[in-house]
Length: 459
Image (tube, rainbow, N blue to C red; front, side, top):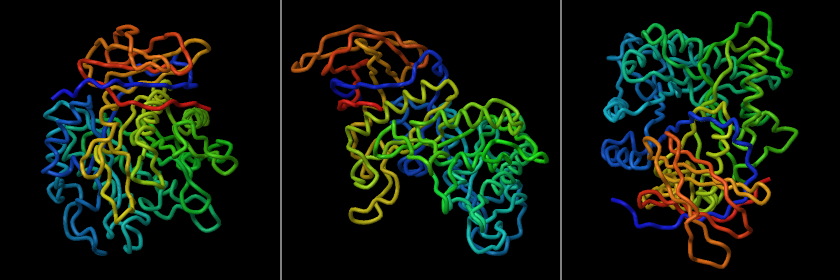
């Protein structure tokens, strides 16, 4: 059912990168395990995602969640490459539902792992066996290979909750070496499953690190590719050949233009310093550590909001920051995919305690945030002298479509029509108009509108 027409008013002063070489093929993946991996909520959640313009999902298949005897130190007797040996649970109906809708799905094959597949067999994350992981990947490929053609290997391997140890004694980064072996084993596993022609993405790194617990993403990248701090490769270390680099470019409460402070954060990559990643990948290729110039997939992203007072921003800023971030990604020609993490917020861990993610378009109890409507029609305006560059997206569009831009100057509640705009085939448009201090902007499309946002001044 269509919502009542509500003005999407925008007063934005953005200093975004030039769009001359912007991505013309950027897609979006949506991840919502709380809703999509639940048989009761899945049908309605997928319908709502479709109404917002979603046509692709990201699904993390956790090894320990499907493997037999995952909490046992001794491996049960079973054939690890046989899909029938695993309990696929809700993954199977979710991927079948996506296939029925004609949606693309990115499957990230990841830990935690069975205890019996780790070196010491004491936990579910420390030194997983590459051989055992490769066998599991073969089983996943055989089970879902007719539905999936893009895979990613491991979720946030630079985080200790997913892979350990992160550092060895003496402070040397250890997780990149472990991950390299896991990635190579996964590639062989997919080949053994008959999926050699599929796309395989590498890394899935989180955005920030430190010197003792979390390996920063660019330091992780160098270690994974056998590069030193100056991007010089060890002679006996061969080049890797993934099809793309996956990264989670989350920012902080400070917004999309947050720059991790030097000197200790030079290897962090948030959305506002995404060029660090493109430069690092190019240097790695030039050093012979990568066989090709890699596209970037931003496979997990969201803006956390209240009620999380520690990490969340206001509901208005969530709308605003997300639109700006998506335009930053669109402006980078190397980025081929953006993402939204969560339809509904994570459930709170206790009274006033929020240990998960509050980046959803709805609150944990299902109440809509303003971002629910704004997700359908993101809009951002940047000032160029006396002109305004208006960027927007009609996400549900399946081809060129027409949207209406209106404006209201300071002190006026009356919105006037600026013009009708025709989008490209993916729903994007960029137009220019006169910029005036205090002017607000609005986009409407077929009775839908986004959510009002406050003004924003970029760095």
